[in-house]
Length: 151
View 1 (cartoon, rainbow, N blue to C red):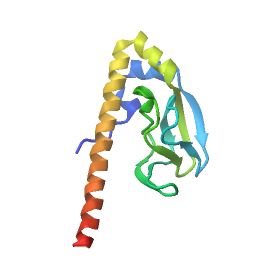
View 2: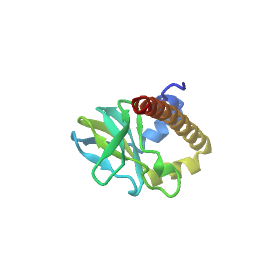
View 3: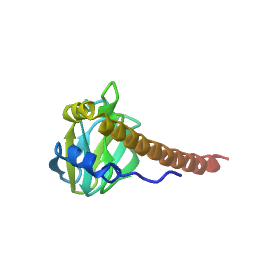
């Protein structure tokens, strides 16, 4: 299994410093919906403290948690890929402090500094690969548990 990659620690220091010039400190109280699946993805966060759950709506009233994120984790990647809509929902599981980045200034910075842009895309791809692998394992475990109960 791949290891969890942390965006800010994976960026080389000069690139991290340039990206951090665009950061804004934000906080979310416990139980705050940060974004909903299908909404406009125009920003992302790096969690400083607290926990966020990513969820998927399975019925009009039921959500299933697909991942839990904590300090150092990237929250939101849909800002990087068309159609720029959230694929999941996110909720603060506890009080959360985070660095918030608006997508447009970050994308402009990436155009001005292609090395930073390439590093950022590669790191986000590593994060996505790890999350996909983790989710696949959870689904296989869940399916196997439920399947055994059926037979």
